[in-house]
Length: 194
Length: 194
Image (cartoon, rainbow over all chains, first blue to last red; front, side, top):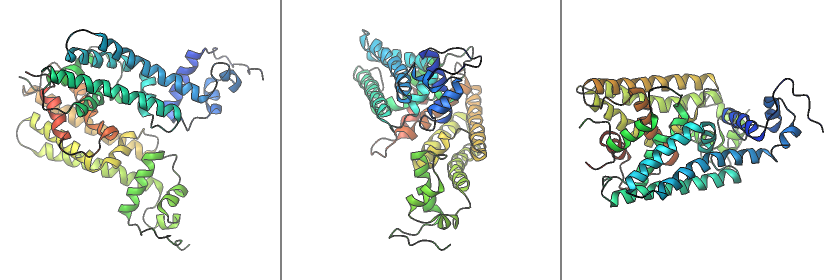
């Protein structure tokens, strides 16, 4: 089957096709979105989509990897750093905020994944691995005396990334406020004046 | 139509029917769940469901109200308190954690609502009102000199409740860790040792 006329819409490459697909998945849900619907939104035929990706699942996998590769890239940086665990933890938090801001639609899709498909389950497993890295850093920072000993490392890592991940619900680019600074000020120094 | 035999399942009142419905909505999505499916899960006929509620929408409204009434109950308490804004803010945070823990499935449904129906839009509007109350308390606490002046009140209120609301993703009842204490320790005093 030949691609239908594109009705004035630009051609897609895999990257721009993925961007539209992820937007639609976030609006309507991955499972609720059919390839038919995607082809209508894109203004190209299904066979034109299959020129770029083998399946809807592949779109999901590409999107999840975009988010996870960003987060693990930052985690690798943090682990390669010399120095104290609290500084590696701060690097990881700041870097994760940057990844969320930069790849917001991809991370949104990742964080809403409930493990309903094989690809979602693999993504959820990588998220758990990431959580363990954060928990380990909190533990190390406690052992080094830089993080207060009266917080549970697993709970702390969940709450810390509860703050970071909440960006998918409310973040709008705004001038004058560094979200990474705000997260680190609250998390490391606390809101209360000394 | 008479209710079908209940095949050994207990009878429902509105409360227990709502609990099952909310569980199914959280697992499969509100829109994706049909009254047929609900009736299968409950083991009663659709007409038996309609004895308790007028529609699927009413189930959603009841569930949203259960979550929102809990949160606004705590907000009313906080606003009625004498004393400093930072203490009212802490009361609100602790009370909200208690509501989330106590009404987790209802709050989960609330926080996942995207405003796709009239009832969801009303719930989203009440959530925004709640966010404004939190932001106002942060502002007052800053004006009273108790909260550091270098944090943006709107961003702070989002991050604070980003932490609280993350409970729907990870909270499991566990002994020995007070989540409210953990949230308040991190948010007000910070992780760093002094």
